[in-house]
Length: 212
Image (cartoon, rainbow, N blue to C red; front, side, top):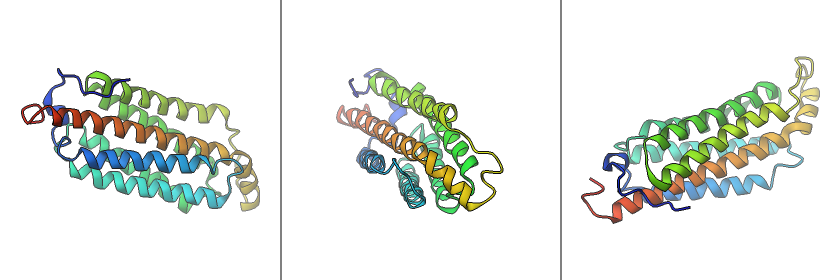
């Protein structure tokens, strides 16, 4: 699928992004690599793995927040910033409450995927051409992953989460779901950022008048 920006795309959509598309491209590659690394840690997920995923999400979230301010003039700046904040918040939850909060941790991650997907779809409607289609598809995938979490995970009862031992037993059985889906979401998000960066590069390469 082509990632070229549509020639009829209003220049303002990429305003503030065409000059710093390399930062977004690097961030997208980083997120995709982090997601691939995470895929190797999904089966038999332990508490250490959960903490590791939390660290990955925190790194990705901080990187995206910093990246957002590098092109504050971009029309979708606020959504880009909110996605970074969501990743940062999810990472903190994973690190601070990896087991005892397994029930609402799973709900939180599923909700985060849905919100991320909605934000990407909003961004896609502000774009045109192949890049808009790809970003919209990644948003739909995120929503699907979030919904799938609720449909396949056997959510624990209050009694199951009453002690660290029972909570850990539940987490060992279903923790792979969290690990797998977080890894997939990070990869999908990385792909979306790469597509956005390449679209902005196309606009920048077309000349100063197009990227004004």
